[in-house]
Every structure is written in structure tokens, then in C-alpha cells.
Length: 138
Image (cartoon, rainbow, N blue to C red; front, side, top):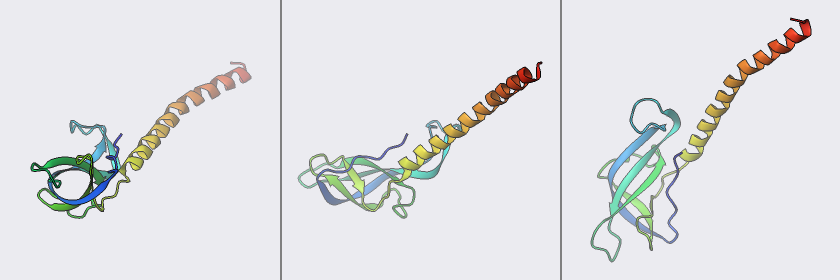
């Protein structure tokens, strides 16, 4: 199940450069074989770099946001972020929403319920038929 990255505990605003954006449209299919569960609420995994004050090399961080919650998100774009002062890799895009985990859980729940109903229908029909045969003396 997809989840969000942790919130920075001591948030510091900064800007970062997007290295890579991947859009996830299916749950459970990492190989691209079309066997995943389509997500009603796709999300984007965003890798970005920034240089915190006092450091001379860039830090790479990853965040996950709802698709299009950060408009026009693309490689090379400069984006506002907040990062944790004590752990700079814990960073989030500002303005991005993160409703996709709850939607993914609901999708899996609905599929599970549908599967249970479909499995129980033939069992219920068989039980009804057995009961009817006994009552009719067959």
C-alpha cells in the first residue's frame, strides 16, 4: 500500500530542483505487466535535490503527492519545499496534497468486499439447494 513520507519535525523552507517525477497509476504492479489494480487517485513520486545551509553537497529527498496537486511538475523545475532541520532528507513539496493512500486503501477494501460477495453467492446457492432438497425429500 502506498504511504506518504514523514512530516518534517523542525520544518525549514527552501527551494529544490526536481530530478525525476514518476506517476503511479496502478497498485501492486511494479513490472508494468498490466496486472495491477488501477488507482482512482494516481500519485506522483518526486525526487529532488537541494543544498541546506552549511552543507556544500546537495541532499536528495523523495516525496509523494497526489497527481497534479503541484501543477506542471516536471524534471528540472524549481519547487518550494520544507525539510527537517535535523534530517534534511525528510522533506516535502509545499502545496502538494496527499490523499492517495486513503483512496488506495478504499479501492483495495471495495475489491475485497466484491470478491467476498462473489465467492459467497455460489456457497449460498448450494446451501439453499441442499436445504430445499431435504425439505422436499429428495
